[in-house]
Image (tube, rainbow, N blue to C red):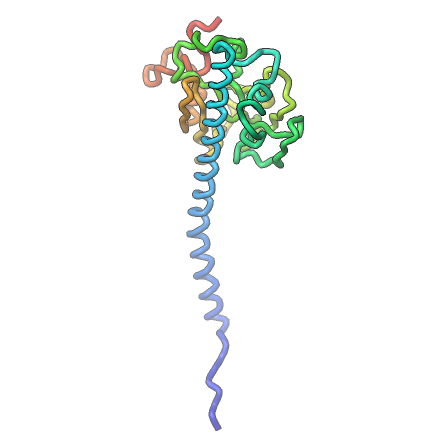
Length: 227
């Protein structure tokens, strides 16, 4: 009679296989999450560039004025210069998408919130390559969190180095409040339409005496001294 030599795994063999699988998964997970974050950061930058191009078309059609102080900048760009509200939503913004165009429609990006930006003539900006025009406008939460919407009052969602509308004072909060790279970096779109991934410390710097960052004084104010 032929003996059946087949047998199942022993508990020790199952334990070893399971352990190996867990080790491989732990090694792969950081790579997976890092790839996901890079993809979000790339999409975030793409959104800013599209908003920047739309803004430049608006400026060209309106005598170079940076939007109107009495109308939300988002409604001035959509639908004439941008086809969909989803472009205003960062991939880091986890709220449900909406195309309604009201308080339920997420807007993640803010216009530079310095007083007098909306309605300012673009030609008055001293250093367009240093002046931040748009950036993600987060709240003061310890995690990446957005609360802006298409129904925001005029001039729309804004962002500033120390506060956002909506939002709060996040410049002094810890940890740094960038959107990616362990919250140490954030994307920004400048007046000359170029975009950058910036360190959080550089993003909030507006010092007039920092010789290592001579553009800092122009980053948030269009010209010095700012009235």
